[in-house]
Length: 224
Length: 344
Image (cartoon, rainbow over all chains, first blue to last red; front, top):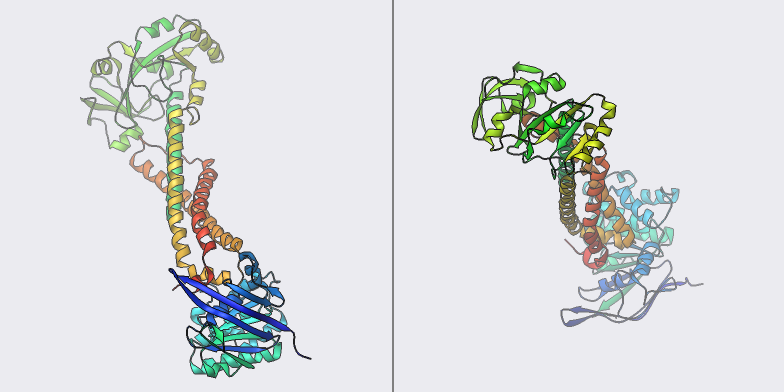
C-alpha cells in the first residue's frame, strides 16, 4: 500500500515585482510528495527552487495555484495561519544554518519547542536523535563555538524537534566542506529511514541530490 | 540603559532639590521660634522680592490680644537661590534665644555680616573675611549654626538703606502668650488686617510643599515631560537600531513559527528590563548628585532622597521606554521573513 500524499502542488505560480518589472519565478509547478519520501529538487540558480522552498514553507504566499501540506491548503492563508503552519507542520534547515547567535545549541532547539507549544525538555527519543546527529555533547555551546557541520546538525535537530510533517532543507550543504557535507547528508538520510521523516531538499549539487529517494529537476520556474 | 538612568537621575535630582529647598526653608522658618508669620499682601509662599510693609507694623501688632512680641525682617534676594536677611539681632535673641555662633559673634558695625555654617562652607568663608554683596563690602563677624531664619544676615537698617527701602519690612514674626491660641489669633488678625498673608508657623511650613507651590509643581511637570520625551527618543533610537541589527534573528524566529505577539513580547520584555536596570542605576546615581551638592553647594542646593518618587520616576522611565519601543516593534513584526533571512 502506497504512503499518503503529504505535499500536493497543482499549477503553482509565483510572480515578483522587481520595480515595475514582473519576474515569473514559478510558472505552473505540479508536484506530489508521499509521506516518508526524501525528495531532492535540483536546478540551477534562478530555476525557481528557492521560491518553491519559500512558498512550501509558508514564508511567502503563492500568486496562484494550489499547495496542500498534509491536506491543508496554503492558498488564501493569512499571515497568522502561515505562521501557525510553520510552527506545526514544517521544519527548516537553511544553507547559512540561521541559528540564533546569542543562544546555546540547546536553547536554539528549545526556543522552537517553546514556540511550538511543546512540553519543556527533550524526550528520550529526541536525545537519541541528538546522539545520532553527534551533537549531544555540544548542546551547551553557542553557535560561534561550533564548526559549520556541527551548526548544521543543530539546525537539523531544531528542524525536527517538533516532529513536523515535512523538513524543508535549502542547500543544507552549501556552506560545508565535502567531509561535513557527506556527514550531514548521511544523517538526513538516516533520519528519513529511521524516523520516516519526509524531507524535501533544495540543491544545485547533483552529488547531494543522489542521497534522496527521488530527484525532481527544475528549470525556468517549471519542473522538467 | 545609561540614557534611561540619566533620565531617572534628572527627575529624582530635581524633585529632591525641590523638596530639599522647601524643607530647608521650612526648617529655618521653624527655627525662628515664632508662632505666627505676617507677610505682605500678594506675596508668595516661597519668595519675598519686596519690602512693602511699614516697620511701624510690629509695634501695632504687639498691641493685639495675646501677641507678646513682634519682630520684622527684610529679605533681599541675591543670585540664584540665595537671599540676605536684615534683622535686629537683639530682637531675634528675645524671640528665640538668638544665634548659636560657631565662630565669631553678632554684627557690631554696620558692615558686619553673619552667615550660617553651610554658606560659610560653600563660599569658604571665615570670620574676618570680606564679601561683596548688594554692591557693598561686608565683613564676616560670625558664623552661626544653620537652621535659623536665614543663611546670610545683616543689620536691618543697613539693608533697608542699601536697597532703598528705609522703614520697610518683608515679613513679621509674632510670638503669642499661648501657642495653642495661635490659630485663634491668626483668625482674628486676618479679619482685622485684610489682604495680609497671615499664618501660624505650622500652617506656613505645611504650605512649603510641592503641591502647594504652583511654580514648583509646574517646573516638575515640565521636567517630567522633558524626561518622557528624552526617554522616548533614546529608547526609540536604541530599539530601532536593535531591530535593524537583529533583522536576521527576527526573521529566524518568524521562520520557525514565532508569531507577531512573540516578537513584540520579546522586544517589550527587553525594553522593560532595560528600563528597570536603567532606573535602578539612575536611583543609585542620585546619591552621587546628592553627595556632589552636599560637598560643593551645601547652602544653595540641598537634595533630599524622596523615596516616594522612586516608583514614579521608574514608572515614567518605563512608560517612555515602552512608547519608544512601539514603532521599532511594529517594524519587526512587519518584516518580510524571506528578506529578513537574507539580511547580512
